[in-house]
Amino acid sequence: MSRDVATRRVYRPFIVKGPAAWTETWHAPRYAGGFHLHEGQDVLCRDGAPVLAATAGRVEFDVDTLGGRIARLFLPDGGYWYYAHLSDWNSTVGSGSRVDVGDVIGYCGNSGDAVGGPTHVHFGHYLPSGQAEDPMSDLIGWLEAAERRADVSERGAKAARSEKVVVPTYPHELGAEPTVIVSSPVVTAGLSTAHRSAAPSSTDVLALAVALAARLALIPGRRAARRLGSLIGRGTG
Image (cartoon, rainbow, N blue to C red; front, side, top):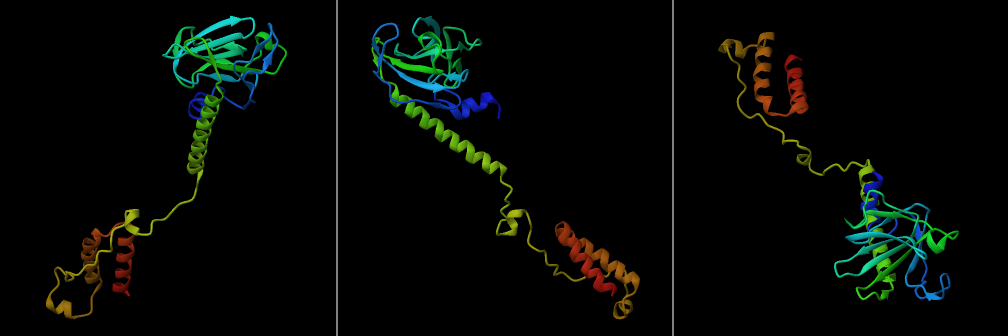
């Protein structure tokens, strides 16, 4: 599948496409720009890895000293998800645009006060009041949702690649029809009584074959051919 399809089908609603890891850092002490508590979770990711919208909403891009290139994904209630230290934003998405779950809004980096450190996304959740909330449970929930989707996609791919053919128990499931038994009298058109009592000639055999062919037209394909061939073989033998 294409990269865009993989992003939407497998990684969303998690916030990063590709390998990622994080530990519990909520309210850990930070000193860059003055002492403060860490109001978010640092999700480590590869440099330039696509960063995804976790929910639908309106995204706005900005720059500040601590967060570097940041994105705020606003929710209907006025709160927002906060993405910081991006290496860049998605140039095809304008600031203030509506985005859907799984849309690429930026790329993993270490801008702002993270310069020189490992590339990651500082991810936070702010209520309409401006108060920060720990997004840990959200990250875990999104990761588990993405893992379930990846598992379903993998099982579907394995099924598509499978070459095992299951033969149905009943031949009718394959489109076969029951054998047609011809029970009506054999027609010997054009032959007199004397001819019928005598040993059959080549003309008699030909007439019989034609009559049988008409009767066996109801028997599908190769079965009719086999039946007709055996009958003719017995007639000419």
